[in-house]
Image (cartoon, helix red, strand yellow):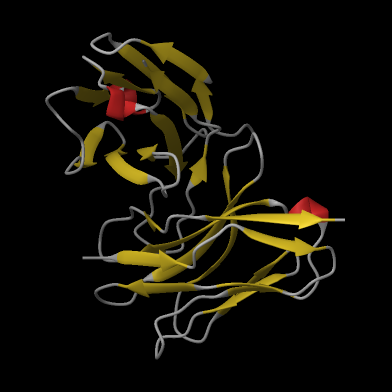
Length: 116
Length: 112
Protein backbone atom coordinates (compact mmCIF):
# COMPACT_ATOMS: atom_id res chain seq x y z
CA UNK A 1 0.00 0.00 0.00
CA UNK A 2 1.40 3.39 -0.98
CA UNK A 3 2.04 5.82 1.83
CA UNK A 4 1.39 9.54 2.10
CA UNK A 5 3.17 11.39 -0.68
CA UNK A 6 4.44 14.94 -0.42
CA UNK A 7 6.26 17.27 -2.78
CA UNK A 8 8.58 18.98 -3.01
CA UNK A 9 10.90 17.47 -0.40
CA UNK A 10 12.93 20.65 -0.07
CA UNK A 11 12.27 24.28 -0.89
CA UNK A 12 14.35 27.41 -0.41
CA UNK A 13 12.75 30.80 -0.94
CA UNK A 14 13.33 34.39 0.06
CA UNK A 15 11.08 36.17 2.52
CA UNK A 16 7.95 37.71 1.02
CA UNK A 17 7.89 35.09 -1.73
CA UNK A 18 5.10 32.55 -2.10
CA UNK A 19 5.35 28.77 -1.84
CA UNK A 20 2.98 25.82 -2.18
CA UNK A 21 3.20 22.26 -0.91
CA UNK A 22 1.28 19.28 -2.19
CA UNK A 23 0.05 16.17 -0.39
CA UNK A 24 -1.53 12.96 -1.65
CA UNK A 25 -2.97 10.91 1.24
CA UNK A 26 -3.36 7.17 1.47
CA UNK A 27 -6.20 6.00 -0.75
CA UNK A 28 -9.50 5.86 1.12
CA UNK A 29 -8.38 8.07 4.00
CA UNK A 30 -11.04 10.65 4.74
CA UNK A 31 -9.05 12.79 7.15
CA UNK A 32 -6.01 14.83 6.16
CA UNK A 33 -3.79 16.90 8.42
CA UNK A 34 -1.09 19.51 7.88
CA UNK A 35 1.45 19.93 10.68
CA UNK A 36 4.29 22.42 11.07
CA UNK A 37 7.47 21.14 12.74
CA UNK A 38 9.94 23.83 13.71
CA UNK A 39 13.47 22.64 14.45
CA UNK A 40 13.73 21.29 18.00
CA UNK A 41 9.98 21.14 18.52
CA UNK A 42 7.24 18.60 18.02
CA UNK A 43 4.79 18.89 15.14
CA UNK A 44 1.96 21.39 15.59
CA UNK A 45 -1.36 20.99 13.79
CA UNK A 46 -2.12 23.73 11.27
CA UNK A 47 -5.30 22.41 9.68
CA UNK A 48 -7.41 19.27 9.59
CA UNK A 49 -9.78 18.25 6.80
CA UNK A 50 -12.54 15.66 6.90
CA UNK A 51 -13.13 14.84 3.24
CA UNK A 52 -13.10 18.33 1.70
CA UNK A 53 -14.39 20.20 4.75
CA UNK A 54 -12.27 21.96 7.37
CA UNK A 55 -12.57 20.47 10.88
CA UNK A 56 -9.94 22.53 12.70
CA UNK A 57 -7.89 25.47 11.47
CA UNK A 58 -7.57 27.27 14.78
CA UNK A 59 -3.76 27.38 14.62
CA UNK A 60 -3.45 28.32 10.96
CA UNK A 61 -2.11 31.88 10.47
CA UNK A 62 -4.84 32.80 8.07
CA UNK A 63 -3.33 36.12 7.06
CA UNK A 64 -0.61 34.26 5.15
CA UNK A 65 -1.42 30.54 5.13
CA UNK A 66 -4.17 28.87 3.14
CA UNK A 67 -5.03 25.27 2.41
CA UNK A 68 -7.53 23.42 0.31
CA UNK A 69 -8.54 19.86 -0.34
CA UNK A 70 -10.43 19.74 -3.57
CA UNK A 71 -12.54 16.63 -4.20
CA UNK A 72 -11.59 15.30 -0.79
CA UNK A 73 -8.33 13.72 -1.94
CA UNK A 74 -5.16 15.75 -2.62
CA UNK A 75 -4.39 18.87 -0.66
CA UNK A 76 -2.23 21.95 -1.11
CA UNK A 77 -0.87 24.26 1.57
CA UNK A 78 0.21 27.74 0.52
CA UNK A 79 2.19 30.46 2.25
CA UNK A 80 1.96 33.98 0.86
CA UNK A 81 4.03 35.96 1.72
CA UNK A 82 6.59 33.85 3.59
CA UNK A 83 8.39 35.07 6.71
CA UNK A 84 11.67 33.93 8.18
CA UNK A 85 9.84 32.22 11.05
CA UNK A 86 8.01 29.96 8.57
CA UNK A 87 11.20 27.94 8.12
CA UNK A 88 10.16 24.46 9.21
CA UNK A 89 9.24 21.00 8.02
CA UNK A 90 5.65 20.78 6.83
CA UNK A 91 4.17 17.35 7.44
CA UNK A 92 1.07 15.90 5.87
CA UNK A 93 -0.73 13.02 7.53
CA UNK A 94 -3.86 11.06 6.79
CA UNK A 95 -6.16 8.66 8.62
CA UNK A 96 -9.28 6.66 7.92
CA UNK A 97 -11.27 9.25 9.78
CA UNK A 98 -13.16 7.16 12.28
CA UNK A 99 -14.23 8.76 15.54
CA UNK A 100 -12.25 6.24 17.53
CA UNK A 101 -9.14 7.34 19.35
CA UNK A 102 -7.47 4.30 17.84
CA UNK A 103 -7.62 5.88 14.37
CA UNK A 104 -3.94 5.92 13.35
CA UNK A 105 -2.38 8.85 11.53
CA UNK A 106 0.16 8.04 8.83
CA UNK A 107 2.73 10.70 8.00
CA UNK A 108 4.43 11.66 4.78
CA UNK A 109 8.18 12.42 4.55
CA UNK A 110 7.60 16.16 4.88
CA UNK A 111 8.70 19.24 2.98
CA UNK A 112 11.63 21.15 4.47
CA UNK A 113 11.15 24.88 3.87
CA UNK A 114 13.97 27.37 4.33
CA UNK A 115 13.09 31.06 4.15
CA UNK A 116 16.09 33.36 3.63
CA UNK B 1 -5.33 22.67 27.31
CA UNK B 2 -3.60 19.47 26.33
CA UNK B 3 0.17 19.20 26.55
CA UNK B 4 2.97 16.65 26.49
CA UNK B 5 6.29 16.99 28.29
CA UNK B 6 9.30 14.90 27.34
CA UNK B 7 12.62 14.63 29.13
CA UNK B 8 15.43 16.78 27.78
CA UNK B 9 17.83 15.24 25.34
CA UNK B 10 19.82 14.18 23.50
CA UNK B 11 20.44 10.69 24.85
CA UNK B 12 23.50 8.66 23.92
CA UNK B 13 23.74 4.99 24.86
CA UNK B 14 25.95 2.04 24.09
CA UNK B 15 24.50 -0.91 22.21
CA UNK B 16 22.58 -3.35 24.46
CA UNK B 17 22.01 -0.71 27.14
CA UNK B 18 18.61 -0.22 28.80
CA UNK B 19 16.55 2.70 27.55
CA UNK B 20 13.98 4.83 29.35
CA UNK B 21 12.51 7.98 27.81
CA UNK B 22 10.16 9.85 30.10
CA UNK B 23 6.87 11.34 28.97
CA UNK B 24 4.16 13.00 31.05
CA UNK B 25 0.96 14.60 29.88
CA UNK B 26 -1.85 16.98 30.76
CA UNK B 27 -5.21 16.40 29.15
CA UNK B 28 -8.92 16.75 29.68
CA UNK B 29 -10.84 13.52 29.72
CA UNK B 30 -9.22 10.24 28.82
CA UNK B 31 -6.61 10.62 26.08
CA UNK B 32 -5.06 8.01 23.87
CA UNK B 33 -1.27 8.01 24.06
CA UNK B 34 1.28 7.38 21.34
CA UNK B 35 4.99 7.10 20.67
CA UNK B 36 6.14 8.09 17.20
CA UNK B 37 9.65 7.56 15.83
CA UNK B 38 11.45 9.49 13.10
CA UNK B 39 14.46 7.73 11.59
CA UNK B 40 17.04 9.86 9.76
CA UNK B 41 15.67 11.08 6.44
CA UNK B 42 12.26 9.48 6.98
CA UNK B 43 8.79 10.55 8.05
CA UNK B 44 7.14 10.00 11.42
CA UNK B 45 6.08 6.42 12.09
CA UNK B 46 3.79 5.14 14.78
CA UNK B 47 5.84 3.01 17.18
CA UNK B 48 3.19 2.04 19.71
CA UNK B 49 0.01 3.26 21.35
CA UNK B 50 -2.28 2.76 24.34
CA UNK B 51 -5.87 3.86 24.50
CA UNK B 52 -6.84 3.41 28.14
CA UNK B 53 -5.35 3.34 31.61
CA UNK B 54 -3.03 0.40 32.41
CA UNK B 55 -2.82 -0.58 28.74
CA UNK B 56 0.67 -1.51 27.58
CA UNK B 57 1.70 -0.74 24.03
CA UNK B 58 4.58 -2.69 22.54
CA UNK B 59 6.43 -2.97 19.24
CA UNK B 60 9.99 -3.84 18.09
CA UNK B 61 11.05 -4.53 21.68
CA UNK B 62 9.82 -1.14 22.91
CA UNK B 63 7.14 -0.91 25.60
CA UNK B 64 5.15 1.86 27.28
CA UNK B 65 2.43 1.61 29.92
CA UNK B 66 -0.41 4.13 30.25
CA UNK B 67 -0.26 5.29 33.88
CA UNK B 68 -3.27 7.45 34.71
CA UNK B 69 -2.27 7.99 38.34
CA UNK B 70 1.05 9.55 37.35
CA UNK B 71 -0.13 10.85 33.93
CA UNK B 72 2.85 9.20 32.32
CA UNK B 73 3.68 7.05 29.30
CA UNK B 74 7.40 6.30 29.59
CA UNK B 75 9.09 4.44 26.73
CA UNK B 76 11.41 1.54 27.58
CA UNK B 77 13.55 -0.99 25.78
CA UNK B 78 15.68 -3.62 27.43
CA UNK B 79 18.52 -3.68 24.92
CA UNK B 80 18.94 -0.95 22.33
CA UNK B 81 20.56 -1.42 18.94
CA UNK B 82 22.39 1.01 16.67
CA UNK B 83 19.38 0.87 14.35
CA UNK B 84 17.23 2.42 17.12
CA UNK B 85 19.02 5.74 16.65
CA UNK B 86 16.23 8.19 15.82
CA UNK B 87 14.07 10.98 17.22
CA UNK B 88 11.24 9.82 19.50
CA UNK B 89 8.04 11.81 20.02
CA UNK B 90 5.41 11.25 22.67
CA UNK B 91 1.90 12.38 21.68
CA UNK B 92 -1.67 12.35 22.90
CA UNK B 93 -5.08 12.55 21.39
CA UNK B 94 -8.04 13.72 23.46
CA UNK B 95 -11.57 14.91 23.04
CA UNK B 96 -13.70 14.79 19.93
CA UNK B 97 -10.98 16.17 17.71
CA UNK B 98 -8.57 13.61 16.34
CA UNK B 99 -5.56 15.92 16.24
CA UNK B 100 -2.34 14.85 17.91
CA UNK B 101 -0.54 16.98 20.48
CA UNK B 102 3.19 16.23 20.43
CA UNK B 103 6.05 16.64 22.85
CA UNK B 104 9.29 18.25 21.69
CA UNK B 105 10.93 14.97 20.82
CA UNK B 106 14.20 13.49 21.98
CA UNK B 107 17.15 12.34 19.90
CA UNK B 108 18.55 8.93 20.73
CA UNK B 109 22.00 7.94 19.49
CA UNK B 110 23.20 4.37 20.03
CA UNK B 111 26.89 3.71 19.56
CA UNK B 112 28.35 0.27 18.74
